Image (cartoon, rainbow, N blue to C red; front, side, top):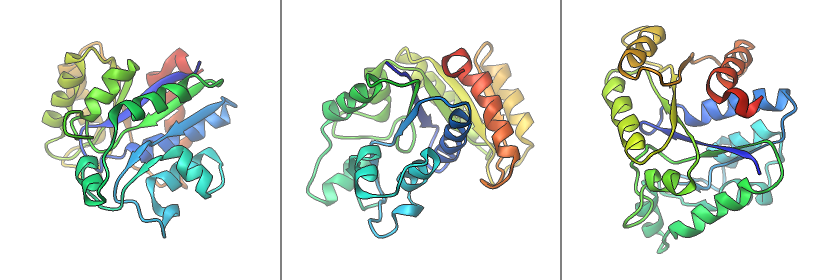
Length: 232
């Protein structure tokens, strides 16, 4: 059974896939048997798969960008860039929560070292009429990697998301992915969160280019600080 981590966010567009790609690259360099999923995705354009989060994850895994790979990483795909419940309704479809949970559990039981599951949007994004991403994480009973930003307002958003996760008994580490527009230096945001979340694993992740060699170094630090012994 793989060590499984759920990558969620304090909101939409905070850098979940950016962090996912860096972690996958680092784990692969360590020759770990790693798998990644983004089971539910909205705003998906079938004509531009390479630009989607699913396409980027496949590229980070070194897998071909074909129909089989896309279906494996993201079985539930919707065109409208809305919350999953709304996007599904636009297509006369619905998401069956138990099926999503079961799919993730099945993949975690396949032989390998690490499974990273990326959620959609923030912690409280609705998946159907009753369940949210938080319910999904809690049902899987796996640790969460909460990706947040350094933008104005992130402190409240991050602390609220951590409180929600903690309230459901979810073990959560925090990764602060530097926002393009940030009122303070990344280290200030990290330091403030550490004061308010004593004892919790918190790491900063600069917004470098995917081609920047320093990305590998930062990803390595994240693997060590956040995933620790779980991922070598």
